[in-house]
Length: 408
Image (cartoon, rainbow, N blue to C red):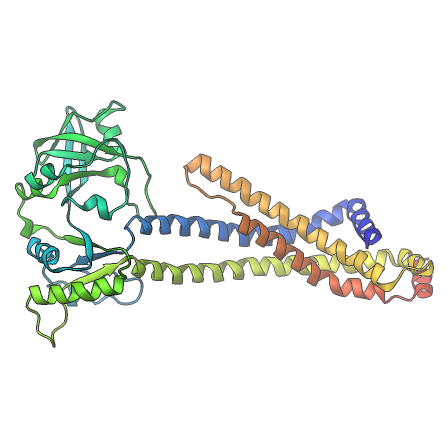
């Protein structure tokens, strides 16, 4: 076995041009598959991180249901009412399974500090328990106090990008910005997190107490209102959803035979939709890379047949001095596997370097995982085994006398 390995390495080193040509097909194939899976994994991690920011065991009562793919019957939902403050008050009063609830208003307004301003900044108006439902970190300052939330004080928490654009690197806490044309004191700054795959980020928002916004706008004119409910520990989303459905139908006096005029959304709707998308992407990756690997496999098999023909005399001599069939077979099989693995490693190296280039050029994380490295090496070895088994078997079955005579 050891001597077979040595002969295989020597054959690879001696025939450098042949080795390089053999590597190209496998290198391209592994690069195709692993690069797609690396992009796929980076997208999946980013998307799942974005989805997880919605909070665990959290439901969203809204006018519009979330949907992934297929036809969306928007005409069924367009005339639905938006969730109201009365709805959330009744939920807080009646629910036995909810740990925290929050009402959210989403607006676009100009935000200004002295001569600096941001057009159409995202302004959220939230009730007090927002921080118990949505995951975020505050880099400096603090969250709203109960008195500020209930009293509708003119205070705000701003994103890191808003802070950089308005205050040019200086500490904004304690300073006053203009929102809705009125002065609002900045009491906190969100920790910088960057945009998720949906383009959302706390870096670009201004968070205000809901009761402050209520004094400035007519809530009936606002679209996209949301009630967020987090269940108590041990309560499943299905249990919470059933309870909320009963409460909302009762509050809105919906008859038993009538459909709901509200949607209760949860992050599993998005997760399931993306799981299907990821499966399609994975299939496409295997198809694209599979064709390249097929070509590379045939290339290695062809070169191994040439190698057997060139070394027929040597095979005859080896068998004449006592080499067993398995010795000759392993010699060529190892050579094919080594060629394929080396090609795969080059493919992985290209993916790694490409990931670094994208990271430094576009600040986009595209890292080659251990799982994909092992997958690349395993697939390479498997292709080498398949490609080399027939040439190796052919070499092992040669008659030593005929082999020496053919090579002379």
